[in-house]
Structures are given as C-alpha cells and as structure tokens.
Length: 551
Image (cartoon, rainbow, N blue to C red; front, top):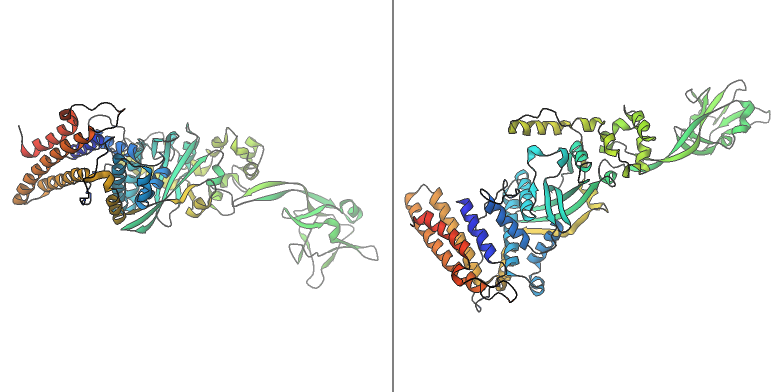
C-alpha cells in the first residue's frame, strides 16, 4: 500500500505541472494537510526507473526539480528560508502552484527528518533526502571508502553539473571528521576532490535552525583543511664553528644560534678582551639562558660554558678549542606542535621513521616541502602518504567478508584503528574558502511552515488544498484499517477510506483537468477532458478496488 499511495501522490504532483489553479473568491481555505510521506532511506537515493521503489524515487525527484532557488544545496536552503519568512516578496517575484507545493512538501518532510529522529538516523535520512532531491546516488555504507573516498552521495545534479558530496549534520560540539585513508583515496581518485556539505543544527524542537556550509578538499587546498600546520616559521640552516683564542677575529661577525634559533647577537658581542690581553665570554641581555653561554667546549655537542651566579663572565683558555652554532641561511618551515596534524604526519616529522625517506623522494624535509607549497603540483603527493602509519591502519583488506553485517562491523573496527582527520566547526566557519554561513540558515518550525502555507493560499488555491487534504484523510483511514485490532474501528475506517477515495477522484477529475484546459498558449494542447489525468485516475481506481473490492 505504501507504493500505491506514493504512486497517487506522484501522479497528482505531476498533473499539477504548469497548472495555475485559481482561488475561488474570498472563501477561507483550511490548513493544508500533506499526506504522510513514507520516508525511504533505501530507495530515495537509488536510481530506480521501474518496479519496486520507482514511485518513491519519482516523487522525490519531481519535488526536487520543482523547488525554488539555485540548483545547489546552499541555493535551495536560502530559497526555502525566503519562502518561509518573506512570503510577500516571493509572491511578488512570481511563484507557480507546482513550486509552492514542492517547497511545502520538501519542508514538511525535512522537518520530519530533523525533528522526529535521533541524530544518527537523521544523518542517514538527510543523505537520502538530498540524494533524491538532486537525483544523486547514495553510497551504501558497506561500499564506502576506496575510490568513493568519504563521499556519501555521488552524481548529484547541481547547477554546475554532477557532483559528489560528503554530508555532515552536526550538533553544537561535533567536529567534521572521518577516515584519513578514505579521504586520501577519494581526493587522489578520478574526481580529484571531496566536497563537504556541513549543516550545523542549533536549537530544539519545535524550532531548529540549520545553517548550511560547503567546502572542497583537493590537492591544492589539502593543508588548508587536513592536519593543517599551526603556524609557519623561519628555521636557520645551522653549522658548527670551532675556534681558539688565536682565531677569534675570524668569526666576529658570524650570527650566534642556540638550538637552531638566533640569539640576535654576533660572536663578537659575546667576546671581551681584558687589559692584560686575556679573553672572556660575557652575558648579553638577549641570550636565552642567564647561566649558560652559547659557547661549547670542543664541539657543539660538548658542554656549554657557564657564567657564575655572581659574575656574567667566564674566561677562555688559550689552549682549549671551543665551538658555537651559526647560520648559513634560513628556510620557511611548517610547524604542527601537538595538533592532529602532528599525529597524522608524525612519520615524516623530526623523529619519525620515514623522515629521511621522504627527503630522498622529494629533496626536502616534509615541513619544508609543505611550507614551500611543493605538494600542490606534485603528481606523487598522495603516493607519499600511503607509507604513513595513519594511512596504512585504514587500508583495504584483500579478503573482504561476504556477510554484510560482518562487513559493517569490520569496516567500523577498521576506521576506529585508522588515522582520523578532524576539522573544528570554528575553523571551518572562519576559513575564507568556506561557502555558506548565517545567510544560508533554514528554520524548520511547524508553525512557521503552517503560516507559510496559509500565506500562499492564493497561489495554491482551495481546490488543491481539498485534493491534498482528501488524500491525507484517505491515507489515515487506510492506516487505521490495516493497523487497528478493533473490528468495528476497522469496518468504519474501511468504509470511510472508500468515501475518501471517491472524493479524491472527483476532486482530481474536476479541478486538475479543468485547470489544465486553461494552460497558456504555446504549451502542448491538452487532451480531451476525460483523458487529462488518466494515470492519476488509474492509481485512484486501484485504491478503490483494493478497499472496496470493485470488480
């Protein structure tokens, strides 16, 4: 029966295409009651042309085609909010009956998804709903990863062409995250990118605000998003200088470093000659330590000379070799500190097991390679990542289990062990590459939706309200007939369902066919009245036969 009701609803919606029904005088129009949609997470996101699920897919795609706004997730969200809150402007700009109904139907089902399901289920339904609205294909959980990367819905038909999206419906504190290995596989695959549609949920029922954001991860923007450096800094190329008292003058203008960092002083700033011709090392204000000088004994691996607590001076032995660290140049490097990036890329960073391997492959250490932006055009960029422990922990197994439940469990366990990337909401919101934001907030509030439906009565008309309300009554009575264990109640609802079906058929014959005769010139000429909505008649007849056992 679910498929039959969706068939009636889809045929009814199709018949309204291009039809501009007219309001009858000033008669008060009752609130529209949309028939209960049968939420179909399994079939909305599949391309089903015939057979089981075809009506579900047909209905959701027709609604998507008729929605107001630019054909993008952000464009549709912005248009839906305007439809809800600025009804006067929307009506002045022009709105067809089909658009008004599609907008209301979409908002009705989206509100049900967000208000009536827990976050985990709502997330899956969110994917399925948008897959249907944009004629995309939802990726099954057991087939995710690999070349699909982190994409949840592929081939969505948006204004710029077909596009895949990774969906995130998040509360206040959740990060945008996922499998590091899946993301690498996706961005390095045929698409060359992963696009994230992030919807931040604020508030509680009955009023919830959904703010839409979108950003793209590709090779050029990789370090804008994934394990991004905390900062970029200048690092000195250091070298050791050995000296004795006899050759002090040869090194006077050389900068002095401590631990690879400039002290701001040259060697001669630290050397003081006494009246007797002896030399000492003196303390300077910019020296990192107040008790230890930057001068080492023998080599830079040797002990450093110490100043006494009372005197900021230490004598140099003419017979001793000393050393200090100086610079022969500098380079820009990326620094991760203790961030998530330090964990993802630790094998390439100082102390990591693959640090020298990376330098052999690229000619630079990883932090220099990233700071220079070499990764943006390097054809082997993602191949380097595949030696990282954070990638290999999430690699595909050669022998995948055949059992679907086992696949799901192993996939979940694998991703828990794999490296996980994370992007905070604050970072995403503030990033200049992020699209969307507060101007793309959609408020899902039943009262707001009801008020909008009333505001558009002059466009939708009483006839259309009557049709949808009678269909809603029909579905309610059908549900009671099947679900009630009270025979009297079942008998009453069965008889009422027959009356509802007859009423629905009468209304569609009268209002839709009659309105179709008034289509503007230039459109294909209407068929004779009795054939105008033949498919809808057949669908309604099937309802009548099922409940009234008509011959």
